[in-house]
Image (cartoon, rainbow over all chains, first blue to last red; front, side, top):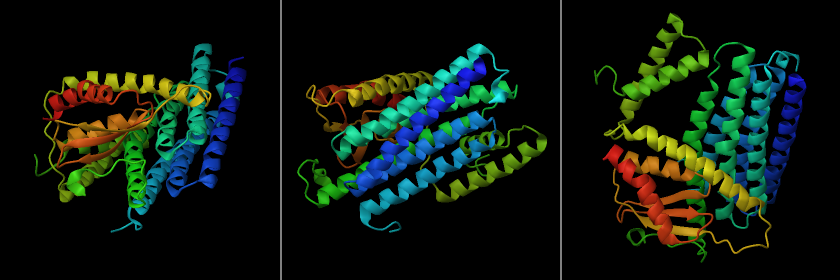
Length: 93
Length: 118
Length: 163
């Protein structure tokens, strides 16, 4: 009973997160401006980390945690670099 | 999900509720990314996913693995600390970059820079 | 002490992070973690960041609790704004310039993080010459009300901690 409840919740959460990724991906493709795309990319990174954590619960394997940690780190570096690029047109001044 | 069979009912229920709440908040944030009208409004939307959204999922993950492995699994705290420190920085950088671009283009809707920097 | 370990707080944080990552408190893990923490602390010292002066640490737990409550509350508020039908209600969003009394750099950084982490408000800019900050608010009802909220709810207590 509890396993069935949890399995249903994990599946629903995955569906919700994939739908959220769809929304963010739409904004990423649509724009209209570069800052919108960067914002959508940042959102995608966070949702991807959440999806990995939910995957970890689903499989019961703790290794997905490390992937989620790396994705959040990469997301920060990527967004910071892209914002810097938007600000001045170059990453390193 | 055979490994979850030994979980007590209260734990399974709270993990399920936390997961659904977290994923739901992330979805609402992403919908906000679509629905809000200008960039400066949209910049508020992902904050839902980065605060309550990922927070709920992390607590659910901590609770689940602590009970399944019958020991304290706390390393999710690292992701929480990382997200808490980094998201304000990226949002601020991005908003400032957008403001800078709008000012250069002479967009009327954004406030002018302070007098000392004109 | 300062020469051996220039930033004890950062070193402690690094050690705890290391122990969480390897998930053990065995002597080997603690030893390796201490080496990593010491290296990180020396690396930061060579960057020479301005030194933080912390006073009145007793205020910190209450402040963190208030931040948590405020984040929850504004999560619900922003979610309602997003899900509201588009044609209803004239919601206005916009920029507010708020004069600040606080000058301590770490206090300002903390204020920026608190305001940006709270859904519905984003710290945009700070002008050190005039001592004003620019805030973007999603649901802007009254400019003066926001200035009052920022000053009374956060700035006063951050000044107690950092100045």
